[in-house]
Image (cartoon, rainbow, N blue to C red; front, side, top):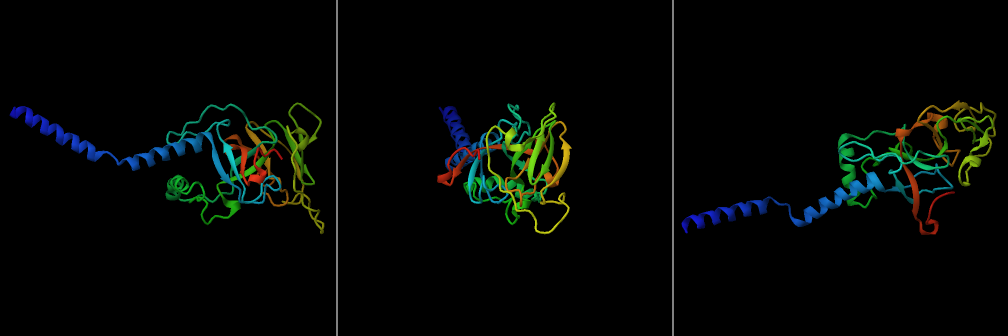
Length: 254
């Protein structure tokens, strides 16, 4: 009996220690929620807040959209691997691109940014705090031309010659749907039309894995006309749905 009592006491002490080592239930719930949030937002669906006028009239500042990284090969958090690619960017796609002009945040801001986004419902971001729109980590753009295409810009409109063709076409004619652009007025003073924002770019041919992207507001967007084609790895996700404002609820095709 003394032996049995001693063993029971040791078991009770071990159980108490194990119980004390456990995280409280509310903390475990928050951790599970945060892990789920990371998986969903990095692999399945991301909520984005439009802050710039560079995609007007398709998107206006203040609108909110969902973007999915899954088709292009999403990066799995912590291990750095990517999911299989099920589709490549197509002409007309509305995509989220890693900005070549981004101001890189510090390591602490990058580490804590998912935590801040989680607890603020994606309304706040340390990576974007105090950073102007043009210097943010990501921009929204439209895919105009794909690898192998020859593209030039005339009067702010792209003309694309698909690989294997000799006939150039207007960018809108090659997209699977119609969309509306905001084109600036012609400048009052004469200037070299190849200067940035003045509406012309000499022809280039895209290499393997290169895409030509542009903003729909051609007078203000900084895009492939100025920074060159983007690599497939720079295209993070594709916009699939607009959920705010409610009056523009739906798939943003134009």
